[in-house]
Image 1 (cartoon, rainbow, N blue to C red):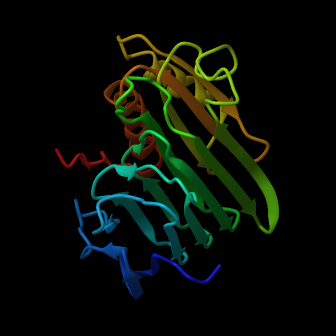
Image 2: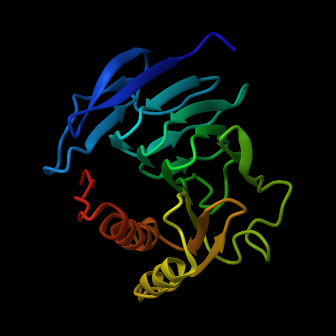
Length: 274
């Protein structure tokens, strides 16, 4: 696949305790803002932008990130990813990440909103050295539809592959096809409308910390369902079902705050844009 609607490449390295870009490239309907340092930790934050305002029929996007040894980076988006109707061909986004030993990368995009008749596929592939840390989140939100239906999109498919020292450690696949599945039923959304996920691979993971995360999740007072599971490699996954984006955001933020405080000895800054 070579005809990309937008492509973006970002290579990062550590320079005397401060993470900086050694290479930045983007073209088409993807851009990256100038680096932001939210505190004195040296960890850099980049906002990824789609000037087009949304994903349309047949759009293809490619993102590549590399973090050298010791570098620490937060990647987020300017706003929610809006996928509009795709009557002819699905919208697609592919992200490849390479993490060297002792690097830290967190990918915290705003929610994905799939509108009526939207068909969207996303693939994330992470290659990491043992000793690196990777954290990513996703929030799936049904968009407004003229019919008023909760699940009017055609397909949402999210695939994540994580390789540690060249060996597959995580394969995560979410596929929702409302016209073919009882999406609101048992084993799918179970009466809820929004789905949140967090994937973390890090050697800092242990049973005691997972117990702390579970307690942090229970701080949320609104109605939700959530589960946390250890991975085959050192890490964990979290799934959350709720009826609003804000509930899932609060739970994920509580977990992210605990990770930052325990593993990085820092309190994360708010990435909200509104």
